[in-house]
Image 1 (cartoon, rainbow, N blue to C red):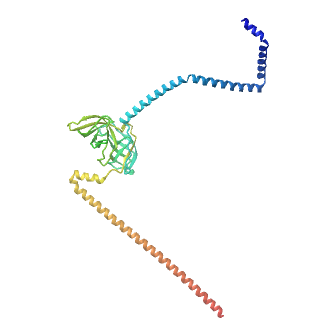
Image 2: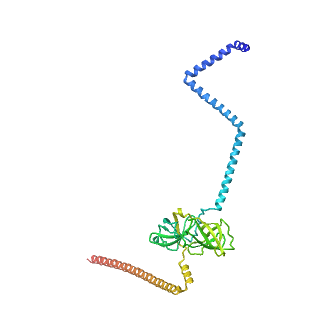
Image 3: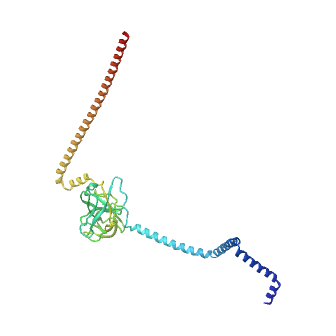
Length: 353
């Protein structure tokens, strides 16, 4: 302590000088606006630079710890991505929201909205807001974005009744995807998302999660439209075939938007199959076909006669027009000749006089 006192006494003039400088600077920056602003600006720059240097040093010191935390976060993200990828693969294998593949360009659809439907009856029906004036006829297929819906049953001018898959009278030809084993899809009263594929051969290789789709054997649906996914495999009552439990892709309780396939139905094929099933109808069908053919031939001849007559009228009108133009030209020429003759005669008379 004695040494400190001796140091202060020995250098007292330096300490006094420093104290006076500090006091003068305080008065200078406190009572002069320009010096005060310069001081604060310089101080802020200095302090900011100092803070940046300190922050950089601190960040460098803690860099290893931050890298470790970042690596842990990346590891958590990798695990989360892997889990999501696994869930996606499982969802693709058991996807109950399969999207309808695009129909071939040959087929066209008419969009419609569901205005009424039933789900709890043995023979459920769906009403849509499009009818005959929109080009819809019975026996046309109805689909949605997830799969097939049913078949048009009845039509009026502006509405149609659809027999959905959820109807005990509904039978749709189906097959296992990527195979030629086919059967018939039927609905047994119960759940609104479950139907059964029957008559699948015993030698068919079937497993759960197989896709069931249309086979194109009917003249209602094109082949390859998704129906559902196999969730159970049982034997039929006679033990000669499989009875597959199918979870339908179409969500009937929330169904609102549908489309009607308009260009796939073939009346000629339907008529031929009717003749093959019931030979007694052959005579009447053949007779109606002959009558239709005769009517078409008569209509064709009438159209040709009408066209020929119209062409003759056009030719006659053209000839009359040309004749009129020729006669008009001749008349005009005669008038000019007459006027010229009269003028010459007048000149001669004047000359004689």
